[in-house]
Amino acid sequence: MKSFPLLYHAHLSRNLEDLPFWLKLAEFFGDPILELGCGTGRVFIPLVQAGYRVYGLDNDPDMLAVLRHHLPAELQGEARLVQGDLTAFHLGMPFNLVLLPCNTWSTLHANQRRAALGCIRRHLAPGGVFAASLPNPALLRGLPRRAMPEVEEVFAHPLDGEPVLVSSAWVKDAHTLTVAWHYDHLLANGKHERVAAHFRHALDLLEAYLEELTSAGLDEIRVYGDFDGSPHRQDAPHLILVAGWTAPAEAF
Image (cartoon, rainbow, N blue to C red):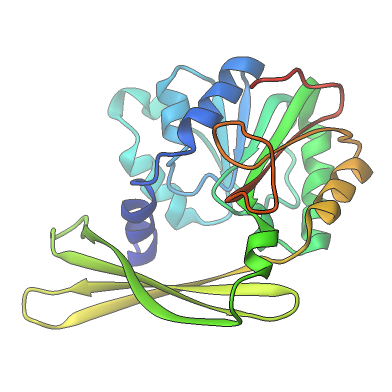
């Protein structure tokens, strides 16, 4: 397995604050469920463990390999995984719930989001919903233009148990915030190995995301500011969208 997917999983699998939100949506709307950008399974595996019929789509085969590795043996037969592009997928079946957790939605350009929404709309069952979480763009717009790297977390490397220092930095322009994540693996011989990853987030405002949803026919929209179901505000930590093409009932 390549280094980044392993480190990505070890790092983000520690972040559990949003899992009750996705599980509550699953309980309310039922399966089958499609998780787009399922990655290494941080959300996918708990949904499968909860007994839901879940399909996962990701364009990175190495991420999917890590997901399969971490899926419990008794659930290996339940892993319905597809390597594919979330802007151009054809699965041939409807879903009651389509999820896109973990800030992926804002890493897409507007034309990519519109293409993805076309696919999502075609795959939603009547009464089904699409739900996505992303950083609150109003907060991102208020950040300084640049931030230097700072160590934020430390975790044990999944292969040798040695420390991995996680740091991040960003650069912002008028339209995007580019975040650089650094994973510094401290080796027993005193040296270190760095793995870096860069993610670019669009700074489009809430109104742009709402317009894209309504243009795709998803005009019954609820907007939350955090995973406890609280309303969206300018200073909320997240922007969470739940949209259906027939009126979704209130889950919170």
